[in-house]
Image (cartoon, rainbow, N blue to C red; front, side):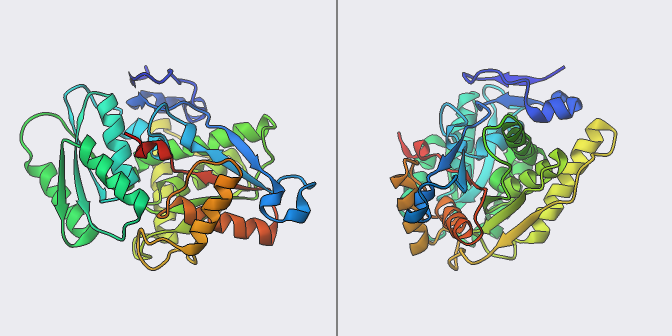
Amino acid sequence: MTTTTTTDAPPDAALPLLRRFPSLAALPRASLGRFPSPVMPLAPAALDDASAAMEPTLWVKRDDLNAPVAAGNKVRALEFLLGGVRMGDTVLTLGGEGSTHVLATAVHARRLGARTIAVRWRHDMHDAARLVARRSAELCAETLSVRGGAVAGVLLAHLLRRRRPGGRLHFVPIGGSTPLGTLGHVNAALELAAQVEAGELPAPRRVVVPFGSGGTAAGLALGFAIAGLRTRVTAVRVAPRAATNHLRLLLLARATRRLIERHERAPVRAARLRVEVVHAYYGGAYGRPLAVGGQAARIFQALGGPGLEATYSEKAFAAALDLARSEGGPLLFWLTFDPRMLIR
């Protein structure tokens, strides 16, 4: 029996993940999103004015449209991570002051009737990050600021989990990048594979995503391997290498595979994981804008796309543009940011 918490989003029991692995329907899941999110081509003129007559080499997966409010890639993980949340519960999460994960968690926990407590720390900020920080402070029941960065934040969050009295407390880790949350991104890969099979786009040689906590890249790589797509995931690093590296992605993908196998009570048949980490667009600090990212964002908006932000999506799209120019396509940029999160 599927245990699904409903919201104002339409029910979606036929997720590709659940069709492929029916035993996972036993997991609690909050129906927060509207799937599949659409794909769209970008005009070849974005890459070279002389190539306007060519087939598009660059496509976009519009995860900014995958929920009625505050969408973006985080909704996919939150469907599973908030699956057991009920009216009156408390959700504890953590992230930097400009964390879109913290904001998305607060928005969707509120849709389920829960309150959010956020542990946050300072980092390099830009205009969009400051708006995210203000919106998070408005929507969270409590925000606790720490000095010492992510390490201090993690320690405080675990202390709160152990000592906070009363009520039902649900913990959502940084970025939602646990094996449970990563299931949402495995589903995203299977969703894209179905769109390829339906002829909505050609099978991309690469899918380019930002790489922060790693759930999106790890889940997509595992999902493509399960689907039999030879698509390579290019993860554009936006955080320090110590926590944002190739080993992190492999370990998370393997842990997620084991989670599926425990529920299915059978091995998961999958091809080799195809995932790589690109370090050239980091900028030296989490949240620090890059000039090339700003240029990429202007190109994206000129082509009719929504706004990007400087921590994640600008850097990933800059990498996607460079790869499309140097290698050709088909190549897909996975848009993980929804600018509606910044609107009151």
